Image (cartoon, rainbow, N blue to C red):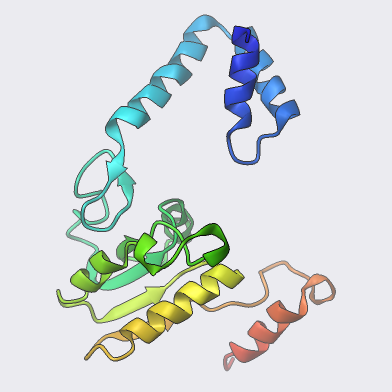
Amino acid sequence: MSAIEDLITELGRLPGVGRKTAQRLAYHLLKTPPGEARQLSRAIDRVVDEVHACSTCGNLSDSDPCEFCSDARRDGAVLCVVEEASDITAVEKSGHFDGVYHVLGGRLSPLDGMGPDDLNITALLTRLRGGVREVILATNPSVEGEATATYLHRLLRDLEGVRITRLARGLPVGGDLEYADGVTIAEAFTGRRDM
């Protein structure tokens, strides 16, 4: 296999990158100055060598504990449970959460062979012994995400003094009712609030 074909094959393994996109990326890299291409290579090497799961929450970080777990300004009594470390970025962009996180490392999906033992649930239960007053279940609104949230709710609901909440769902800002699916509209009605 040629070096170009090898690069196309490796780029094509990335999520959301098909063969055509992989080809475009490979030829783009070949047109860039060698220093820029090597910068990308070094960044990939550095991530592989330096980034690991935080021993407290499971977030991917080059420090342990991660920046969220080690930040004394964050409210350690409010724990937001997410499926993947990448979900933390979305929550942080909102600017409305100042608690800490717990990364499950996936979601329940029997078809994909993901059961409760494959998720970071044991560490979550250990953390709940340390003065947590609220657990926010921020799993994705997919069938698997809902199953994961339901499983966790059943597991945690009897904990003394711990409030279990779920992120609200409904219509996105700027969305049109005519384009929304029935489940989204139903969730919007269920989660409606006084004005």
